Image (cartoon, rainbow, N blue to C red; front, side, top):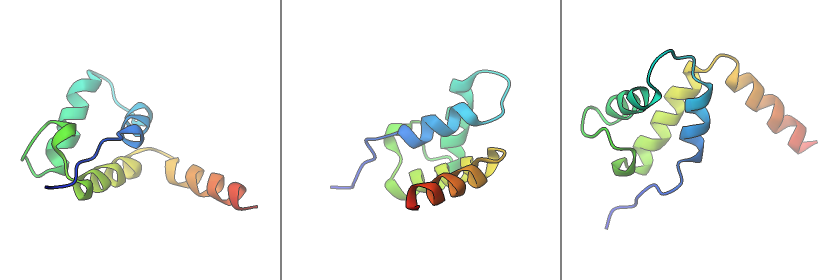
Length: 78
């Protein structure tokens, strides 16, 4: 049986941060379609590898997100 992603916290946190004007549900479908190569528009049907790739793509689209994450991780380590 194939593994399934059951925790979508990272996806929705990034979705909130993405600069977008319009329907967020449509943005979600578009991101999932793009991340799965058009296979599905349902977040529940993505593989773990697709989910990781979609989240990475979303991180690159969020202004300043990666810098903020690096800074926060550095603070946690100290």
